[in-house]
Length: 121
Image 1: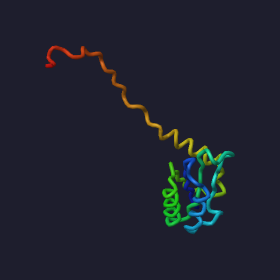
Image 2: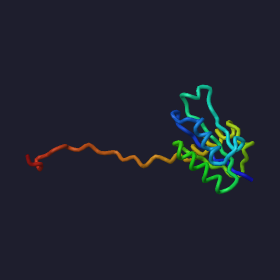
Image 3: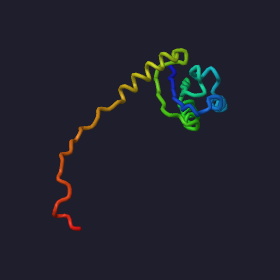
Image 4: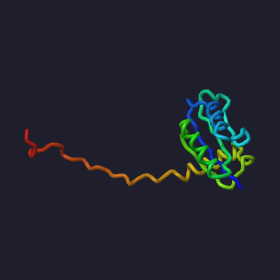
């Protein structure tokens, strides 16, 4: 079964250019999905690419990097037909929550006297 490589892109990134580069790399328009919001000029967007082999993975990652991908996610055993926006969003949200690390130990500094007579002028 194939896998899905999903990428999140910044608002300044041109999704039309990304589509052209994916197709120039040998992917057909049925191998990827671009998810846009209603106001696609001022918001982030997500792209998912069906990965069938190592070569496709490398090509898609290269195009993603070239277009300033913010974050990528790899989902194994998923076809492009299963890559609906709601399904991907749910999986990405779950991974993001899992990546949140616990905060480090907090050190509380005690008050000190400041400069004392040992400091020479």
